[in-house]
Length: 450
Image 1 (tube, rainbow, N blue to C red):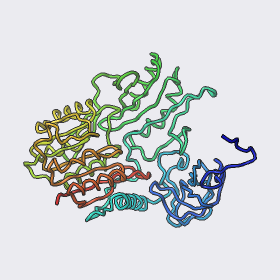
Image 2: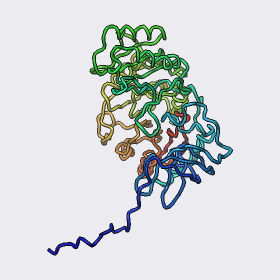
Image 3: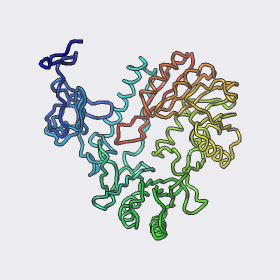
Image 4: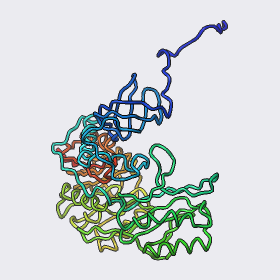
C-alpha cells in the first residue's frame, strides 16, 4: 500500500466542519417563534438557537449553554426589546431555578402553547385531529404543588451544605427562600428547612429531602449514612413544630419515624381516601387531579353493568371512583407493591368489585386470564413511554370506548395512530394543566370504536 503524503489534507465528505459556538458566548438574537418546551427560537448563520426565557418578536442578549452541530442552546441574559405579552416573573428565582420556565408568559398563553404542542404532535406523528377539542382543565396558577423534592449537596471544599432546587440547565443548586408553586402548608417547612439541615452534626449524610401534603404534611429525609441520636432529635423536634410526619429513607423502603403513621389524599367528589407512602406516585396537583378523574369518568361514560379495565392503575386513582359506577373493575399495575397498596385502598373504602393484578405492561396482555372475558371500556394512564404494546392489542379486548391519559404528547400521538389502525377514532382531546408555569403537557383523549 502506498504511503499517504503528509502534505495532503483530507476533509469530511460534507465539507469543512463548522466551528462550534463556544459556551458562555453572548449573542444578540431576534426571536421568531416558540418551541414546544417554551424556549424561543432564533436563526443565525445556519444554526437554530433555542433560548430559554425569550418570546417571539423579542430581541434578546443570550448566553450560550451548549452547542452541537447546528443547534445552540442558550438562556436570556437581557431582554433588549420586549413584546406586550411578556409579564414580570412572579418568582424572584425565575431564570436561575430550573423548575418553572414559563413564568414570563401569561397563563392564557401558557395554555395556548400546550394546546399547540398537543395538536402539532397528533398531526405530525399520526396525521390526526380530534373530532372535538375539549376546553383545558385548569386550576390555580400558584400554590398547587403538594409534593416537592429538595436537592441537597455537601460541598467538600467549602465544608458547607447547599440546599435548594436544581439550577436551569446545570447540576448547580440554587438556594431558594420561597417557592410560589408549593401549597401553603408546605411553605413554612420549606423556608425553615435549610437552617435545620445545616444544624445537623452530619449534614453530609443527607441525600435529599422530599415534602408532601395530603391528609397530613410529611418530610422524607434520604440519608446515606446512619443518623446520630442528636440529629434524629433535631429532625423530630422540627417535624413536631411544623405538625409534619417524619419519614426516613436509608436502606430499603422509606419508613415512618412513628410506626403506623398514615399519609394519604382525598378524592372528595367520591368520598374516597387513598393511602400512600413517600416514594409512591401521586399527582402533584390535587385540584386538577380531581377534575381529571371526573372528566375521565364523564368521557368514558360506562353503563352500570360494565366491566372496565384500568391499566397503569397506581394507587387506584381512577379505579376506585370507577368501581362506584360499574359492576366490575379490573385494575392492572406493573409494580407489585403498588398493586398491594391499591388493593388495600379498595378494601379500606369498602369496594369489593375491584380485582387487582400485576403485569408487565410493556408486553402484550390480551391473552392474560383476567383479559379473556373482554371489557366494555378501557382507561389507561401510562408513564412517558406510553403504552404501544398494549394498544396494539386493544381490538382483542373488545372495548367500545377508551380514555387515554397522557403525560407525553409524542407517545400519545404514536399510540393514537395505532389505535386508529385498531378500528378506533379520535373522538375528543384536550390538555390538563397539571403543572402551571412549566412547559410540561398532560392530556386526555377519548377513542370510540367504529
